[in-house]
Image (spheres, rainbow, N blue to C red):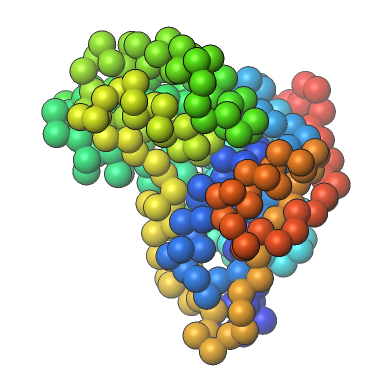
Length: 282
C-alpha cells in the first residue's frame, strides 16, 4: 500500500450542485475517505451545450483535480459522463493509473433490477438524451421498453434551490406526461440534479413508480474501484477532509450544499479553471 496515494482524496465533479447527491452517497458509504468536489458553476448547465464543448469543459475540470493529487475521478454528471467517459479513461486510467467512475451505467443497472413490467422511463438533459448513452446502457437487456424525455428546466430549479411551487409542478407535469402515458413503473433520474426535485417528480408520477437515482449505485462502484486498485485509506488514518469548490458564483451553491451535507461543508472555495472554446473541435 502506498500510504501517500491511499490518503489522497476522491475527486468528484459536476456542472453545479447535482453531484452533491453522489458526493453524499460516497461519504455515507466510505466515511473514511476524503473528498474534493468541484461544481463548474461558471459553465452550468452543461445540458444545452454541444457534446464537444461539454467534453472540453469536463476534461479541464478533471485535469485540475488530477493536478491537485486525487486518487480517483468521479464524473458525477450524466451529461459529462455521456460526453467524455471514453476520453477520460484513456487520459487518466490508461495513461496515469487513476480510476474513473461515471453515473450512467450504475443508474441503468439499478433500473433493470427494479422494474417489474419492463417499462422504464428516463428523464435527462438534452445532451444526455441526444448522446444515446442510456439506450446503450440498456441495450443488453432484451424486451425492455425505454421512454425518454428531456427535462432541462429541472436543472435550473435545482440550482436555485426551488423544490416546490406552481411553476415547478406545472413544468414537471409537462415533462413527465409522455413518461406517464408509457406506463412505466421505474423512472431513472438521468441527471444528478434531479434527486433534489424527487418530491415533485414522485408526486406527479404517483406512488407506484419507483424513482432511481445513480448516487448510491455510483458510490458502490467507487468502493469497488478503490478496493480492486488497493486504494482504500487505512482505518487508522486521520479524520477525512472534505473540500468543496466552485468555478463561478458560490452563494446558492453554499446554501444548498450546507442544506444537503450539513457541517461537512465548512467552506466553499473558488477555483479558476479554463473555460471551453465556443466551438471546440469534436
